[in-house]
Picture 1 (cartoon, rainbow, N blue to C red):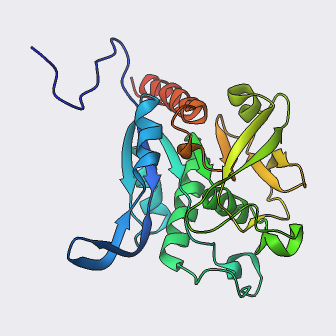
Picture 2 (cartoon, one colour; picture 1 turned 90 degrees about the vertical axis):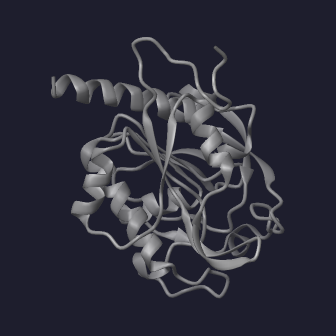
Length: 258
């Protein structure tokens, strides 16, 4: 009997890990509707499913540390997705005129989920805004408008046009083990990491010194990149690294409860 459209083949002896992905929460239009909505570009889902995981959406909502821990207890991995700027009040700065209006519910949700993931050693991949959320969670700060620093808008061209910028990756880092020591990142960010948060190490920079990846060595897989790997449908290696780590995490957890 033919399989159902969109079904995945069973893998004997292995289960696809559940990967939670944070989402947007803002105004959206579809058909006749113009409403506040939780949504996420499909490319994030494709990155997970292409790598053999099951994507689970995590819409922003009021939360507590206990709630976030309960969510993470049911997941094998976490992706903190891109989106609007982090509220600069969270890292002790006044808002730059080019910084997005704060989305406090989303900030609190993403911060709580990442904090819970770190506490439980759940593998995570933070992308663009997600990398900035991680840095702020760890006590770091952000450059609020990169053109003020580098003199050009090359990291965010606008109008949904991604720029391709070369990055150099630290040998021996998790990112280097997955994609090598040189890469072309799909960029769409006007902010970047400034002071690096506690416990994080810089593992990639662009040619003008902008931080493009950090990692948290105290967890089995804690990777954050400033570029958008979901935009490259031909290269799922970062997603595969997360999914592989999530499989190991799930298997270890199963052994502990056996």
